[in-house]
Image (cartoon, helix red, strand yellow):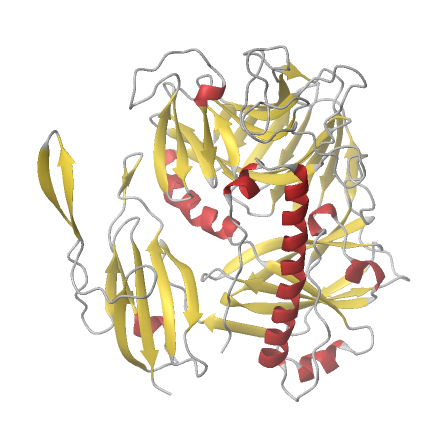
Length: 578
């Protein structure tokens, strides 16, 4: 049986950047060691699970520069596998992009059938170095908690289907079946049309930066503090260089905003979102009296959100924020920008009575709701003075080539009917967080049929999907015979989110594990240590009075069926018969 375990380096200085640079280097070294150790473990698991006839599986590589379009296996091999590991429980379709050096390729699925693909040139900006010349894009289809293998064959003697590419610095559009994006004559987004609603939303996306306070100001901006010198940002006034690519699977508009800011706006086939892949850096440093810069992306709509925006709390519960307001103390507007910034690890939204605009992020970032209808998200920072709050050095990281750090990431934006999008975004945010892991193997010394005859190419631990709204937080075998498992389940919906109510969800474990015979199920605390024998009670003091807060009386089960309430996490030990 396949077991998925993970090791995460999660520490305040690690995630927030509030450590000395030498300490950061040590973190990076340890993480890289863990990366290679994880590669060894995954190879061992794959060899045990996939081998049919006892043959050693070709070595699998995790390409740690895949987001830079760099991978040693795909660079040199003429025939290789792409094995896609899915840690999400649900059946899913995802588009992947694999860097290659030749425009003519054939992509085959795990059964050996050809898969539609699209080859595009990589977005070769001066920001990233050594990236490969092309990317092949194709759609993968997989089941819950498992893996599937695809095959890519390079053909040097054959030309691929031509990709339509056009340079346009004038009015243009980008569209798929769900959205139409209209640009003005300067290359800026003018509006977005939601085709299903037949509604056009005025919209703007802009990059700019705050100038950070320096050494001679009251509080310098640095590792611990965001301290802009003004409430306004500095825009980029150079012409936007725009290239549009039209293809079978994705249409995208690539724009160079400045020498150190670029992005690609992508509309994948049938996707219910617009994807923004941004690349920022290296932030320039003046030779004398350098100026600290804190770069943001600002999304502007005409939604009347009345100063309110909604962030996630550790990727789970929604938190309503209000501009220039604090619920716990008498707010004084002495810091109108930084005081209106909040952390997000998952998503941020604004809405009016009817429509919703939301951004999913792929990492922890800071977001500000400074003006009505707008959201601004901090993407990158570089400060040249210590902020005197403990680090003892400026936030001036030079990167691998000495120019400064280059950061690339992804936002997914949704805009449309509020009631329709609430649960959709919740579902998509889990899938976005649990993006599949890609591993590559060179199989130039064997045919695809030989590989398929010797190794399993498709495996799923969960054949059926769980009910919508249920997420498997973790699943772990507790003994060598895999007869005892620890599983944590959560309902990702809130009881009442923006007026959209969610109900308790029932799960039948016999349907989740149809091929296994369940002997017994025990509910435990979240650590999986102590058995839960009663629902939770605790004393709560409010206004000098003591209240007994009742927990949910939902530990009782009928057979192997349980109920999970909105935002609830439940942990179980499941014992299977041999």
